[in-house]
Image 1 (cartoon, rainbow, N blue to C red):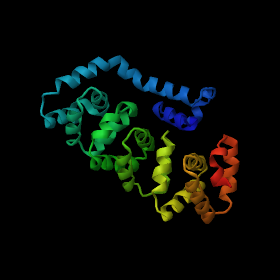
Image 2: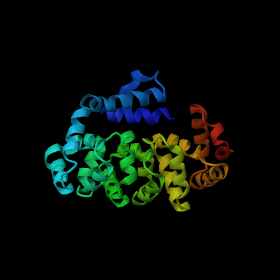
Image 3: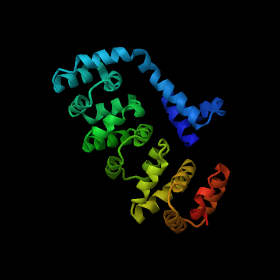
Image 4: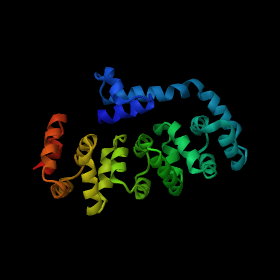
Length: 258
């Protein structure tokens, strides 16, 4: 588990910058994750029964009427909390009545760990529309959190709407499943990978990110990344080596750095 990723996710949850959380330096990634989920679940733990009763009251209402109540009365925050207590078939039916903007607002208020079943059942076309909206609004932390819990097949399909390589790196910064990101990266064409590498080394925070992704690749895949990285700029791998040694993952990157 990457500590910086969890720090970014906690900072977003608290509406802070990672630098503002320097007093948490002694906490490791697991502890930061526990702190984040405790904070995110605090409201739900306190008012869960209320959200459950509201969700239960709407089970028999037609989806169209329930959806109107969500958008016009409850709003995205309450809708997000109700979603954990709504039968999945009902939740999917409601989502089909929401536009991408409202769905994006709901997503911002959801806890990814609790939305796993919904992510598995929602139509991928709807998820693509929400992804486009979140990218437009710069909500990369929302996408990163959901990436960890979305079915891999859907993640691959959704990736089709992300054209900017820098966006992929932004999203990855908030995803713990670097192995999944690595698999997605390996599916890119050589041209797209070259763009991804160039974007990564153009921004200091992304250099560590692409190192973490590459560390999850096989020996053959790392060798391919090394070749492409040299093609972009032969100085980049030396820069990567220094950083990898500093953060302690040089051994995992042996085939990339050799």
